[in-house]
Image 1 (cartoon, rainbow, N blue to C red):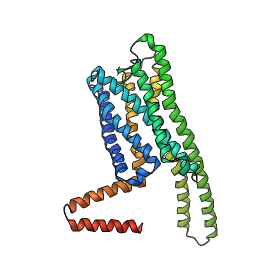
Image 2: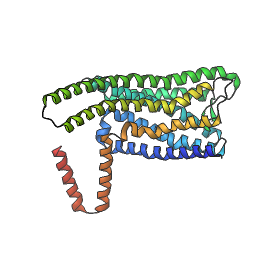
Image 3: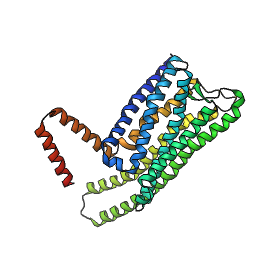
Image 4: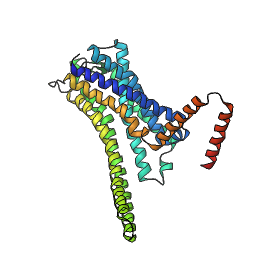
Length: 339
């Protein structure tokens, strides 16, 4: 292997470790916390983490071995299975992000009717659609035998084997990416830009009230006024930053690969091997970043993780003390009554 391949292998290895640990933490939080399980966004997040975990365990090692060996790492049967899952899981993750953006849009734009517009069964129906939609294209690709090892990406994925089927494969690929990547991107942009518009409107209202209050408080210290103005600026930037991360991470991670797959449909274009593998690695990096973008950095998940760590530490300190366990139970009961 040359230096570029070594760097690609190291990149995938780091992404694999981070993705494995972070997505496992999200699933542990979902299992541990009843509050997260009761909330509608938890369904979308656990589905997204589950798909990312399967990508981490199945697809990343396949690409890693493909780069190291410079050839198909498994037999045809296993390779077709991995390629089928790659197409299914990538589509499912994209649609899950779109579903999360729809949930956020309804919660922010229609807060008073959110409970009736986005019920638990509605979320399950949306997830059912994403699974059916995601299964359609890989099943069709297996039927047409368009799944196999692709040397350009060093992975088992969609691959044109016979030149005579290029026209049909071209139509299939365009429709596939239009109904997965483009559809999800349009939904993300529409919903999050609507959310940003509402957030900015509320920020302006808060800023007006703050400025009116500062004008009335004549004796207020200059440092306090400066701090209020700084908080206004931070509040305005926070919403824009979050929306930029949601949309920007999706485009950066998926767009290079999708554009490359579309460009290679042209018979006179040859994709560079290193660029092909790098574009594939960028899609893997989305699996590692999703847990931080959508869940682990939120206060609710942080509290759950802290509670899990605290319980583990208590068990280590008092492994078999009945007195302490009963005391913990009594304390938990008092805390529940207090809250």
